[in-house]
Structure formats: C-alpha cells, structure tokens
Image 1 (tube, protein in one colour):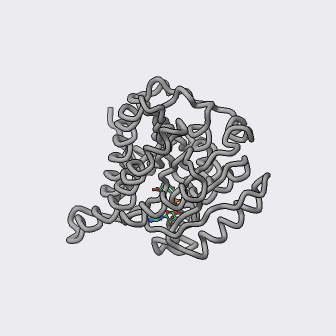
Image 2 (cartoon, rainbow, N blue to C red):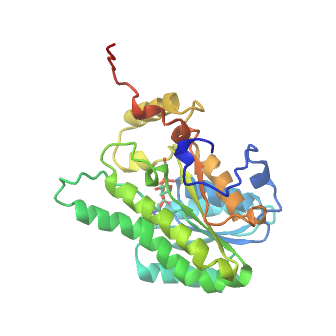
Amino acid sequence: LASDSAAFITGTVLVADGGHLAGNVDLSYGKVVLITGSSTGIGAQTAIQFAKSGAQVVVTGRNGQRVSDVGKQCSDISPKGLKALEVLADVSKEDDCKRLIQSTVEAFNRIDVLVNNAGFGLNSRITDEDYCLKLDTMFASNVKSAVRLTQLSVKYLEKTKGSIVNISSISGLIRDCPNISGYCMTKSALDMFSKCMAVELGDKGIRVNTVSPGCVRTTCRITRGETPEDTDKFYNKVSERYPIGRHGVPEDMATAIMYLASDRAAFLTGTILVSDGGHLAGNVDLSYGKVVLITG
Ligand code: NDP
C-alpha cells in the first residue's frame, strides 16, 4: 500500500488476518448471495465458502453438470442444510440475466449480495483479423454481464442495503502478460464501472467493490486448450516470481470477496482489493529473465 504501485488506492482497509474475518460464520448467515460463474474455479469456491458460512447461495453457469456438482457441494456443506438454487444461464445474454435475477427473487424474495465473477480471457493481438470480434465477446461476458445484472438487481439490493463485488484482475491495472490487451481492457472497464457504481448507488445504501486477483490456479488455462504439463510449468514459474512464493488458490479470492460483501466492510465502497501475493507491489517481472549489461 505504501508503494507507487498503489498510487490509486486510498481510503482502503486491507485486512491481513489469514481469512479470520471472512471465516466468521456470522458474516453472511442468512444472506442470499448470487455468484455468477460459480460452476468452477474462483466462483465455485466462493459459493462453497458462502454456503459454509450459512448463506443461501445461487450457483450459476452454462455447464449443467458442473453447476449441479457445485450446487450439491454447497447444499451438503450448509450448516442449516440450505439447498443451493441452481440456474443455468449465459450471462452474456440479456434474457438469461433477466431469468437469473427472476429465479433468485422468486425463490428467496431478496438479494443481499451479487458477485459478478463470470469472465474469461482470449489471446488477442491487434494484428489479429478478428481482434474486434474477440473484444466484443470478452466485453459481453466480462463487462456487460456485470452491468446488466447490476441494473436488474438494484431495486432488490436497495431493500436489503446489500452489496456488489465485481471480480476484475490485476490485468486491469498492469499489462504483465503478452497478447492480452483485449482482456486487460475489459478488466479496466469493470474497475471503472465499479467505482462509478459505488458513487451512483451510495445513496441507496448499496456498496460496490472490486477484487482484483493475481494469478490463481483454476482450470481456466486447460479450458483455453493448454496441456496439463504446460499448465504445471506456468504455475511453477508464477510461484517463483510471486513475492509470497506461491500462486493464488480460489480460497484466497473467496476470502477477499466474502470480506468485502460482509457487514464488517460497511464503510468500504469503490475499493479495489488487490489479492496477488505481492506481485503488483513488487512488480518483480519488469526485468525478470533479462540479461542486462551496464557499462561504466
Ligand atoms: P474459470 O474458467 O475457472 O471459471 C469461469 C467461470 O465463469 C465458469 O464458472 C464459467 O461457467 C463462467 N462463465 C464464463 N463466461 C460465462 C458466461 N458467458 N455465462 C455464464 N458463465 C460464464 O475462471 P476463474 O475461476 O479462473 O476466473 C473467475 C474470474 O476471475 C474471471 O472473471 C477471471 O477473469 C477472473 N480472474 C481470474 C484469474 C486467474 O488467475 N484464475 C486472475 C484474475 C482474474 P461455465 O463454464 O459453466 O459456462
């Protein structure tokens, strides 16, 4: 927080407590929490942790089998045996977003927390002929979905004085991988949307915050077509480069998300909580691997 890398972060409370606050079962007890992209990865773990802490969760994604597997895990772990609501939806589609909110409200009559987590990255170079097409696809899933779901849920969140947590990326703040300019732009847009919404929805009592993960091991690279061996190599390299000595795991993000969504974070809105094992602060990779000859 003291470094120049945190130049735009102010007014933030960064809780460093190994997840104690988030683990506190009272924090989300009885809340209705909708997490997009909860069929796998960060979203799935977030749904499971919320369910474990007593929240009523809505699990959603496009893959029916995975949605139902995660839904079952949530129901099994719920201390009160609350059954997770499972909704198949493609959040890049307006009708699906409407159905998702409708189903949630029909089932529970309220929404306390909306976690806009669904998203993905496509390799993109400006010289690609289909660059703009890729950009449109990513914007639809990574940004417009969050915009639509925010629009649709405002009237419910206003009643519960609820909150929104948008899942961005450090790629919204720095460009530290090749060929991801399109993805970086979607995440920067999401960051700005969150800040604007924090201001615009503040008087309705709705808080809007962002979690920006560093590299977190999920199946996203395998889904993109990488082999398991290449994936292992990639994450090992990341662990070497990250100041904390390891890559992130979905539980790390669930902790940050649950904290921002909780009443303990009542005075936090418009904040970007970077959870990246110190990568951004250290920014160790600026000259990583380069051979530098300095004469004189
Ligand atoms: P995964 O690929 O593991 O999971 C992505 C989830 O998003 C899946 O549940 C998928 O559902 C869902 N999803 C994607 N597009 C859509 C869509 N159009 N409609 C509905 N669901 C959709 O990703 P991660 O868990 O790794 O990433 C989660 C979020 O965190 C993303 O926004 C990502 O950009 C961000 N992030 C991840 C980082 C990482 O290193 N893993 C780093 C920084 C940010 P289904 O397959 O069922 O359709």
